[in-house]
Image (spheres, one colour):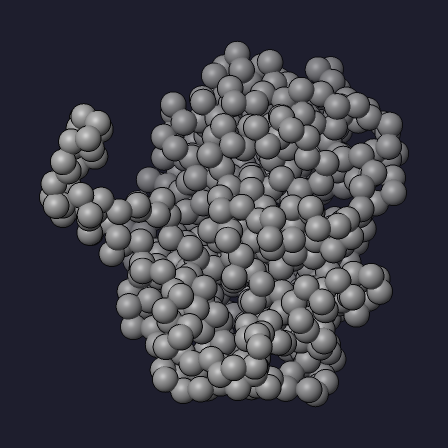
Length: 606
């Protein structure tokens, strides 16, 4: 086992044999291991062959479904009398799995490699999709793609829930379409953590140039018509554009919207009309830039779906206080009617991440007002999510059952109280308007019985996180033997340390001893021990951080809850060609744990 320096001086642990040795019929002795600690192959020492392992792999659900359809109908059994003879086709009446097992990676688009200081929706994103396919993975999970707050750049406190972060727009794709000249591209920079202000300074002028060309060059008349259709079909873009232009105006850019001129703050029709007239060009430019984002995003999603890869988005339950969402819908939020200042805000009580709790500061919802309008705002928000993602993780799902309420002027989240949320009423309204909404419930933290009952009532999968499993005994829900089928199993989330960083840092001696005995491992390849355990979990979906695939330490951590600055910056510098061994290892794990997509599973050999 060897230690070597990886990305940006980060520690990477290597030295395992690849599972390519597991060819059909070949014998593996118990001294060898296929790159994941000693987890996959533990036993008495007798040889294990791939054929022996294959005998334990269940037939794909699709094959069972075909067999069940051969001539026998459920009513033939239900209508038969006690002791009646059943037809021969009865033996084909086999159980059918509700949904296939699958696996994927958390990688926020900002973390992709690329030349312009931040990940983009262009060629590197498509290469990542190709890499996922080669690894037998079918899920790409990411953080919110909305414009992050301009102070700490958190995507969980964005300036608009409906729009996309313009810095993700691919410059090279704009060049390929003729919207930007090659000579006008931003300067290339070495790959390092994202310097958001520098990226904005470099890319903003380029995006503005592309927007001007779309709006004014007759060569792009057809594309402009597409943009006009986008604008017409998404009326929320008008408020989004006004807010974006206003928050960047000199004199307004250093204050929150509730400190703007009173008539504009209160959205008096005359004030809005005057603003739109005065800033028409800037508003049109922003709409054009959002059109670029929407177009590139949907093209990327279509490409991923063509490879049988689902995009799993992330929706914070709350929206940022200084956002178009709150400014345009003040009556739906707990803000002062006269001043607009948030009066009741969000957070969580003291927990494992913070002794004083987490004070998020987003204004809470006036749920009675939402209910009175049939949850119209939520239906529009979820409808937009369904355009962008195949499934959506709702961050802090527990807030729909009961939420922590803190005074708007509080300095910490310690002094708050629990308030009952809308419960199933909201989801019934969503389902009535939109059909079955495919969500993932982030149900971590203080989870009371009502939260579990709500999640189960709407049929949403929950979450289990291996890193949380080692401190409270064998009944801990995050331990593999306690996992449940309708769930996502994570090695760790974006809020966690990396597996390597946690094991060699925060994990206590008792944690390490438990892990070593539980997995029969020495812990030297802990990231892949956890990935392997995730793959083998009974959970329908297995997800792990790209940082753990790369065996990186905490210098690659994406977010440290309770710490405002210094997050959200990590980027990977690997070439996808250089990660083929990792792809091969993951594909093997997906194969033996029945997580390959149906087509790949048919061709899989041990």
